[in-house]
Figure 1 (spheres, rainbow, N blue to C red):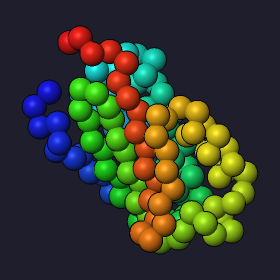
Figure 2 (figure 1 turned 135 degrees about the vertical axis):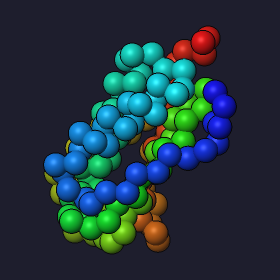
Figure 3 (figure 1 turned 45 degrees about the horizontal axis):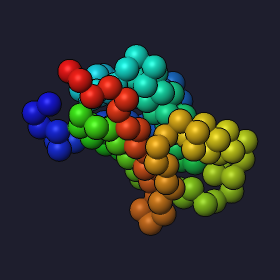
Length: 129
């Protein structure tokens, strides 16, 4: 893969109706890496769950998503323009479900504060191209 370090950025309003856009972008980014069909599906699911979670924290706010793909992994960063993952909105059922899914699907999952972001990494499972 050429440009493995070049990020792919997506800026959207934190609106759950845009989940399909985020999910499909993540799947296309995953195709730049060495991912099996099952792993691409994991990336789609992780991107959607992280996006829905971010929407619950900062509805209608600005959300920036950065994707990085290499032969070994896909990393995603969901940065909030407002809100915090440690506030009341982040502690409900959506947060608990997202934490469960993201922790089980991702090889690395972190909530970062100041600035608020979700950091995800999913390692590739196919290395021969």
